[in-house]
Amino acid sequence: MKLALLSDIHANIHALDACLAHARQAGCDRFALLGDLVGYGGDPVPVMERVIALANDGAVVLKGNHDALAVTPPAQSQQMGDSTAQWTHEQLSAEQRGFLDALPMTATVGACFLVHASADAPEKWRYVEDERSAGVSLDAALTHPGIRYVFGGHVHHQTLYYKGSGRGLMAFKPTAGVAIPTPAHRQWIATVGSVGQPRDGQPTAMYALFDLAQARLSFLRIPYDHAAAAASVRRAGLPEYFAKRLEEGR
Image 1 (cartoon, rainbow, N blue to C red):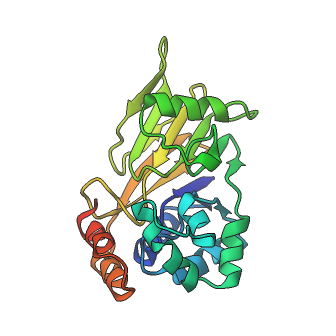
Image 2 (spheres, rainbow, N blue to C red):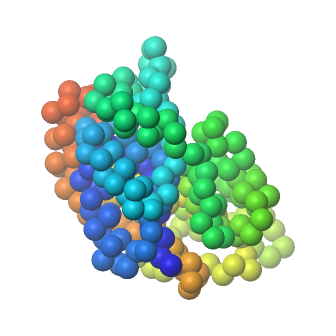
């Protein structure tokens, strides 16, 4: 089975559709959406329509911190990410907000543990951004029987960590499109990047494709119409900063 791992869509329908099309062409059998479906971007309604259709077709869908904010916006914006929560809440239907509210924090598919942030306390939205935090998340996930792989998002970067012989976790920066052997005799944790808001200076969407049968993981970069996505942000009247981010990949 080939499992497409998509996270941090952030209401970017242009990037989402590009990644879905690529994954289907690559022979994807199942989708897993790892949270932050909305927030920041200008198209939360079509993104949610697409996501709900995928869920009805068997996709795994998890809750992210921006999904929780869209359900219950803060009374006052404390952080930059809070600034679009009230607008997103107002755009979504009651059914769509109910769907977000009911989403689980974690899921398992075979030997894979799926989570938006860190597996040790998913509801605290901790970042897996270095070897130490990756180790904490991996150790928590490994308390579940049969788990050998952990996949998450939240940090908007693509990184693979694995346990080497004689030491703790080691970080590995993947090359886009190059399949990485990930044999199950080792333990692995990866952040799959952001579909809708890359932050590494490249305005191309990110997702990952995991071949469970072959134990091979591919990190992918997909061109899409980021100018159209930025235009959606501007039409919505959202902060200009979020449109610029899409254009510049930051």
